[in-house]
Length: 351
Ligand SMILES: [Zn+2]
Ligand SMILES: [Zn+2]
Image (cartoon, rainbow, N blue to C red; front, side, top):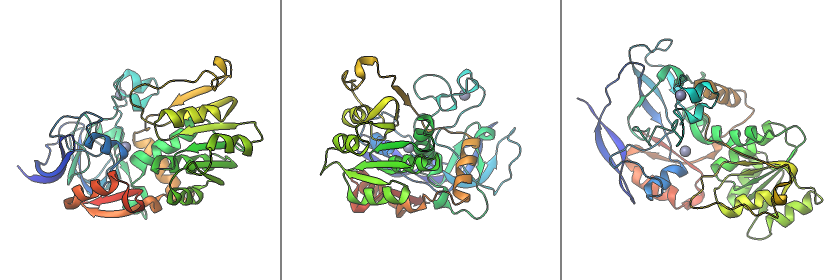
């Protein structure tokens, strides 16, 4: 049995580099050799013990790689082909998938999110891909690993916020938080035709990047109250769509407070504890508001579309990759990313 290096969750506060066996490939599965992967905010929640995974689990859910082995029953691919796989790996056959909710595959409790959660993940030399025929997505020629590195999760989730919010041509959109997901939501709102995008964050570098991603106006919440400022900018009308990209009571509430009657609150954050809804901002339930949520859309068709957006030059998210590490330096990479040192947005990890 061959061994490989992998980033393994041991206990809260401890993700270490360890040796693990290269997985055996079963029917309907594929093994890919990872060429680039990254660390997500969710992995930091796992590291801190805020999201439970089994001890010994290989973490990571953002794979770019090359097909190494195809299991029986996986047709239409060749060994050596460059592919990405979405963070969410729908089976394409269960009730929830066939209901059209692929990311919720398998039913309640985020069943479609398997990598680095319920099965071993991508921060390793090799990754076993389940339901491979539904999930392996070939990378168009000419695109680099870093150009497609955000497609599996961050871009899919961020764009999903704009899509689920049904941003329309001419809309005014506020995006609360300009971390990697918020920045992709900003880029997604622009692609969908919003003509006034307001990015909110407290970190000047992120506000600068928000402008590059398509924000027309940025607000630093450390110097002005974003709710007051957005209501002023919209002449008291409020925004058509408010995208929440952090997962806190305050940002959720601020989204509601800047929403026009009939507006959409598109929520991307992962909340902890209890989320309360202020009745005054919710117009006592009579504001015709819609609140929608999105778990990263996955599957090969989603990945194909996102990579087409990159290949067409309509969007360039490669600039969100600010730091590079070898897999051997994974502990160091987590240290930098978890503490948001040195203006980090996304790190590229190469085995
Ligand atoms: Zn993620
Ligand atoms: Zn399914």
